[in-house]
Image 1 (cartoon, rainbow, N blue to C red):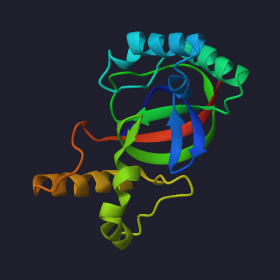
Image 2 (image 1 turned 90 degrees about the horizontal axis):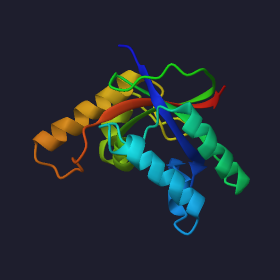
Image 3 (image 1 turned 30 degrees about the vertical axis):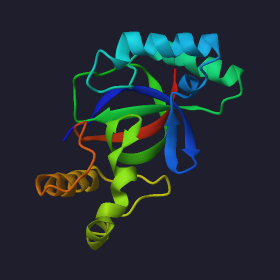
Length: 176
């Protein structure tokens, strides 16, 4: 299976209770520049694609990143790769570190991190455990998690089912 480079997310990494806090400028409603950058992302990408909150434009990412740094937000650029080729990028970047694989509904909602405890025993039976970032190390492990999740939904167990499960590999990158 091939992973496609879908785009970027600017995030604070290793936050309390989560691997990353994406698009932190959206948390600053009184900051006009932050608000303008957030609005631009919504208008140009977030509402146009099913894969919400992943931006394929490295120029925008550089502007967002620089503004975050100017107000002392400690952020990184994350690359999201998935099996979905709806959006692909050709930008040049260096991968600094692979954080791992996640199962998301959107960038702001991780099914895996939210529901790991629900499937922990079955995952542990197959020696599937989260890495130091709370993510998985192999795509196959995320696909197995999705199988378990879909099985439980089919059985009528009440799990969040608003978005389709999207397995993604997340890496910290430097954009050139």
